[in-house]
Amino acid sequence: MAVLLTGGTGYIGSHTAVCMLEAGYDVVIADDLSNSAADVADRIRQITGRDLRFYQIDVSDRAAVRALFDENDIDAVIHFAGFKAVGESVREPLKYYRNNLDTTLTLLEVMAERNVGVFIFSSSATVYGDRNPAPYTEDMETGRCSNPYGWTKEMIERILESACVADGNLSAVALRYFNPIGAHESGLIGDDPNGIPNNLMPFITQTAAGIRERLSVFGDDYPTPDGTGVRDYIHVVDLAKGHVAAYRYACDHKGFEAINLGTGVGYSVLDIVKTFERVNGVRVPYVIAARRPGDLASVYSDPSKAKALLGWETEKSLEDMCRDAWNYQKNRL
Ligand code: NAD
Ligand code: UD1
Image (cartoon, rainbow, N blue to C red; front, side):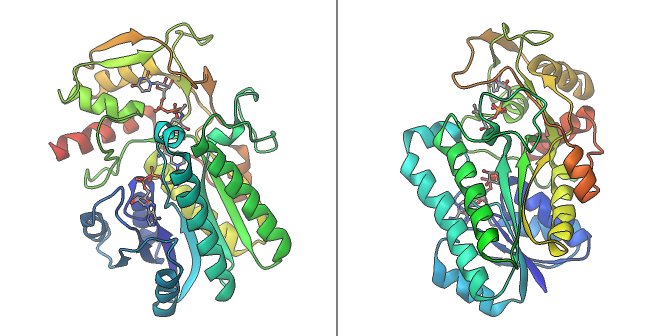
């Protein structure tokens, strides 16, 4: 038996592959390498001392997915593959709807053909939209997403819910990630965005490394303790372990569940900058800039459902996240 990780050479998928292998499960990765590199599979092997099968395929290609299922005894799918750049999704919405929805539908159809009934999906806190107050709980109304990327997550959650109503043997868990940062402590895998980073932590590490001149802090007039945006940053290894727990849960249950993966604690942009500087002994020059359109003041989870259902909670601190993110950046230089 093996678990299929689509998008498994990407940022979150690669860390989850490590945790699944370390937990004793066999792993097959399918990734088209549109946003990751083939050598990540070797790094996962190097970290874990275990082998895995890697397929360079587009997971919306039904024939390729069927062939993968023919060649492997897959008992569950963890679906990371998809596009995730918010700004690009506004400029090229059809590309996002096509890739994110097609990959999911193809996988669910092939799973139904093969009687594979466990599906774990990478959803996002973005589904909570702009009307809910933090901390977010899973029973809040979702939707009202501010961009096409967010809508793909919302739509896929609804698809999974409907599929579970129709097929009593299906178990689908949508994991709503908050803000994953950091890297594996080996420094061998991490977040590797192409071009100028959109997200805070890669911009900080590249600024500390001298690749970027300075960080722009997007707004200091939010109704938060220091005026800068507050988010629920979660170490990517904690997040990865949440997938192992979700896989075990989904194997023993049927139906659809949406579950937050966060720490429940919010930190501001300046908290992150100052902690990063202190822990790593480096400077991160910054300027205060205008608010970024679409940003919310304060976004953090109530993680109690994950603890109750999955027996999972985060273990790593903000210091760990900052240290491991910088360690990965230094390794890449
Ligand atoms: P990533 O881009 O590093 O990984 C996604 C992987 O999917 C990449 O390796 C890419 O090559 C692959 N891929 C894309 N389309 C594919 C296709 N059609 N067939 C096969 N492979 C394909 O992104 P990530 O940060 O690891 O995110 C993983 C998932 O988690 C995504 O679905 C993303 O939307 C979701 N998510 C990420 C965050 C975050 O902050 N990183 C937050 C919430 C949700
Ligand atoms: C963003 C996306 C979200 C997506 C997530 C992971 C938006 C509006 N939201 O979340 O849908 O799931 O990334 O890909 O794009 N910041 C700066 N300067 C920077 C970068 C960020 O001050 O150069 C601030 C932001 O204003 C925010 C915080 O840092 O307060 C975190 O930003 P970011 O890492 O981009 O994540 P989110 O905006 O929370």
